[in-house]
Image: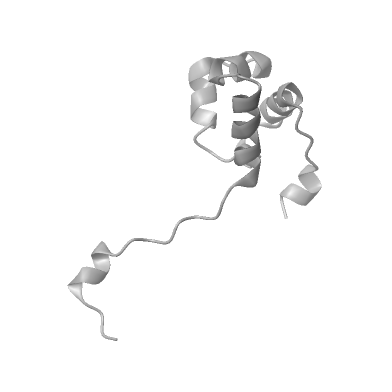
Length: 83
């Protein structure tokens, strides 16, 4: 099928699900925690935590990710997660 000018308006496919972020959001909801609580556990400012929440937890600094996971009761093997 030939390309048309309407191809520029076509929707892009949705990105794959980030299951690590999904686990964090689910635990926050169940434990009734907010981003301020995560920021206190990670020893960062709440604005910094809000910026981190826009990215995948795999891209967070190691100490922040470890402290948040400890607070939420999430265990992760980073050797397998980076694959």
